[in-house]
Image 1 (cartoon, one colour):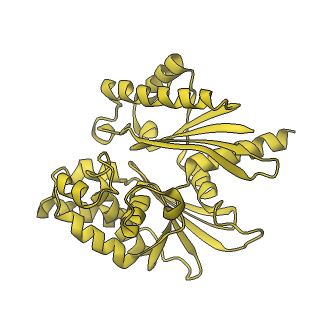
Image 2 (cartoon, rainbow, N blue to C red):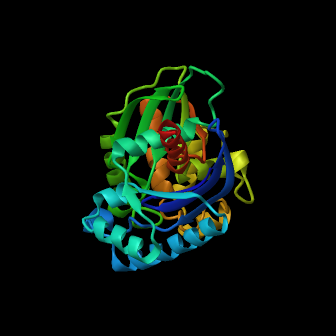
Length: 311
């Protein structure tokens, strides 16, 4: 079965096209991502702007063209934090449906966490490995921590805190001033304070752009390479070091020194690092393993299981 799954996130929209074998193994055909900033202004306005409607339409139209050229049998799209928060998300979903025929389902926080966990751990499972996992997903509008054993999800914590949301609330200037930094730090601590230390044997996996960008920076990659990024361990010391460096940089300085940072991510990467740093401290972890899998991979596996149970 060839399937296309689209993760319509607050900052990034990602599409996976994959062939799924009868045993559930997944072979990637295309893996696309674009920084669309769907959630721009949603935290304060509680609405998706008309300009964003048009901008995102263009990206999704391109994805539809790619999916059609790859002759996919099924296309699934799921929306996360920005679509949960925006008062006019129904209008946006209907706009996309009428223009492109793409049906976007708004994923609940619990469903998003479940799919993220399944997608992230899928590349680290080895047979009947009973290993304990935790998956940290720092998104644009929210941050989720899920824990489980093997492929079984056990718990989920969702924080109404993401790198776009934190930037728009506290870190508008680049570099941010002292009072803005203090406000941002207080915001991060107030949310992450509910996290509890993980058991020492737990493997912590980080998905989404903050962690994968940090992995690319840590590896000093000249161009993004998912095979090298996925599985790369980033120590807490490296996270702290990069956060301290970029904190005092302007966006042009950041882009010049670190080509691994995409232009559309440069204004929010420090906010993501602040969240990650505090999460690692609260969880008692010395580092985190990067994965470029997440919701879109979980959606593909979930659809395979749904079809398997029907047949």
